Length: 87
Image (tube, rainbow, N blue to C red; front, top):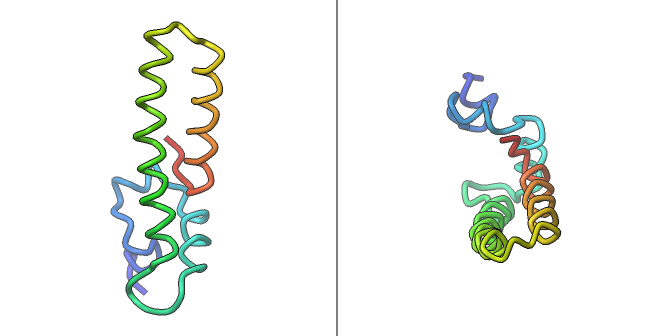
């Protein structure tokens, strides 16, 4: 197995930001085949959620709502960790 196969094709520069073991576990949940529908949907949902959360963060910054900023930061951090995104 090549290095790329060991890391499910995750480029070396991205490996600094992704916990490979967590990501491998998510990919194992996919059905057989190249489509990877389950993990693809998780990733797309995360990016959509992140985009919305960043919009809410900007609004909370404008409003100086520190309590909501903390909640939004925790939400984003938890969602990222669930996908193995570490930074």
